[in-house]
Image 1 (tube, rainbow over the protein chains, first blue to last red):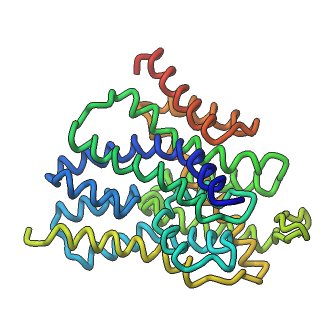
Image 2 (cartoon, rainbow over the protein chains, first blue to last red):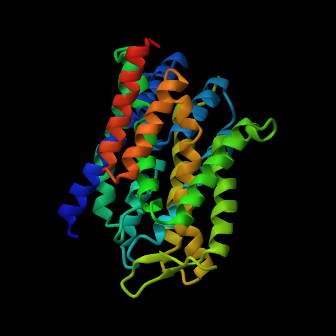
Image 3 (cartoon, rainbow over the protein chains, first blue to last red):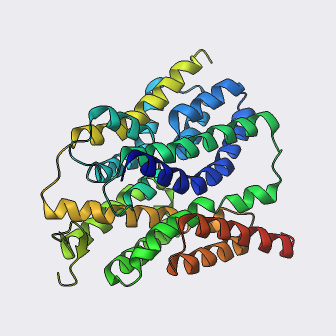
Length: 244
Length: 103
């Protein structure tokens, strides 16, 4: 894959992310307005952070006048899942990917861009990331801008409809490989069931969603890795053994 | 409130960026351990599943339109439609369901 085709593929896969981001960051913009942030500050937060939960939490800490240390710690906890994602992505990169590419790719490690990058068949070409970032991040920043400037320029129905865009994309990433692979299908089903249990069980539901993701990922992916180790074929394609 | 907004933003962005950056720069070789490789192979399936469900059911104006969008996405993804098709059709389904049910 050369730079041009990798970039084009990233742009194409970035479009649904852009749409979903518009809806989510629009809401962020409205909340930033309610918190009396300036347009410039809200846009700056979106452009430098590119993370939904972290920004919403950050906003409430700014409003509350929390300490910088508290801010740092909160961001660390909420965004720790990106660490797991970057670990997985480090193995998708070719070993001789130069340092500066890694710096730029890191900027775009969001749940969504991680999702499309890690599901690529081949190694991750840095320009694929750049393509995805170049459409997704403007969606995030423009949505923030529109939200804080206009309040309600987009009809509620449109926002509601766009809100499933990112989830639809996640489903499009995890379901196709699960078809015809009982282990992956089982992992997807168990993960969703466990997530449901965590969200409705009294004490467990108090765990933040960021932490829920980390806990369940370590437990479920850990058990799966112990029971069903993945071996690499001679052609580099990863396959799951059906026998433990 | 005598905190500087720019320091807040710097702290937020700095911490978030470092979390993303460190593994990508520190782990530069291919991991040989089968267990860790397998673990990382399964990571996206678990994280994306956990993020999607049940959160998708609360994403829209009501649970029924969300459930319809979820079902549409599952069916289309099962038939291996592209990322953008699955995503846009599930949005369209939510929109239509909310339009017709008036909620």
